[in-house]
Image (tube, rainbow, N blue to C red):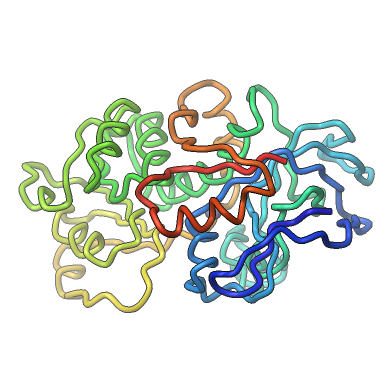
Length: 329
Ligand SMILES: [Zn+2]
Ligand SMILES: [Zn+2]
């Protein structure tokens, strides 16, 4: 089968590899659409410390079930499904309290083990969700990134009517804007690119501002979501939020950020890491299916599997030109 494989940093190609085989507890899925994520670009650049090479990438995978074992999840051949790519151990402390997204022994498909940007993928049936009510494969793929945005918002316990300061107008930021709105909150997007600010405004942001305008805000949001992956955004969030605020950090910042911890104490800020998602796929699916979240305007380009290496290079060279690219199976 054809698979998109990172050989080493800055070297990616489509390889013909042995077809995926399902284990006893796994379903075999024909990949129909695979999303390219910021973490895939980081992996291409050799900047994802969790990933080892060579690696078939792809953790945002929607497809059709070809074979599957008997299961109590109602999944059968022919179903349209999305995979939940976070393979957890079920034995460690975070797993024991339901926070399987940050399992001590976590293996993410496409990062620690081979991913699904290939013609076929085998995945535990327990971690597969049947999709209903969403029209196209490319929209179905967006369930995974939306679950990431929802997890960040839930970590920060976003409440109705609260202003949420969202840093970064990439896919996660744009999804967080819409999800926050759907939760009854008032999203404010902080983003340097004009076209991304305009997009967020069209998608329901209460206000959109440039990074340098954060210090001039005449309100103090009780919640901030960091989805830009820049050190400055976190520092800016800490000074902009109200006392007793919550800040979710979704973007992976490489290196260290010098934080004046006294301001965290003085303001009693909760600084929360937010990784992957746990239990958010169902809500993400509903929000896309009923139109509360519109993912179509976020899809910049759709390519076929043989074009994937070329588009990965293009996104890496010019990330501002792309929000979401989908590889069709
Ligand atoms: Zn991702
Ligand atoms: Zn675990």
